[in-house]
Image (cartoon, rainbow, N blue to C red; front, top):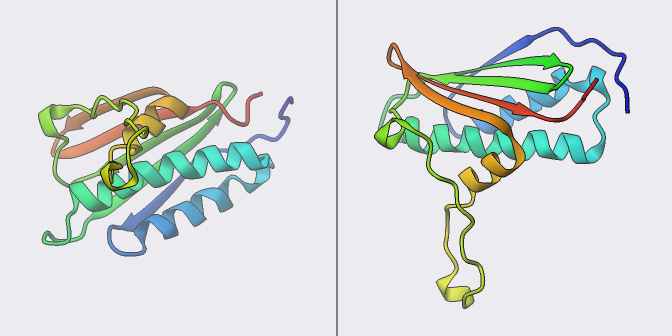
Length: 149
């Protein structure tokens, strides 16, 4: 499908907390409406960004710390959506994203892992995933191969 709609870059800013992920996703999907994403594309965007944002809320700004800003920039290019997520929370352990391997789900229900799926999904669905800590800020960049021109 060839896209003829041009979508200029846009920015979203939310404060971490209970409803931050929901607010950011609603604003992101609303900003992408001109692209008329199909259900699968919209689902990919929503899933990847929900995982990334939940990680920020839970780990970069845990409840015991003061809430902080999460800034998202979305740019539409011919090879998809380029997203940059910036926060001033805690850095990633060891200064890098987790490996993101698939969890073993061929186990008894009581032995099913509670977490660990997020980074696997992000790295499986997104392209060009990079993380860096610069000037006391976490910067996560990724590309989603949706809305291709």
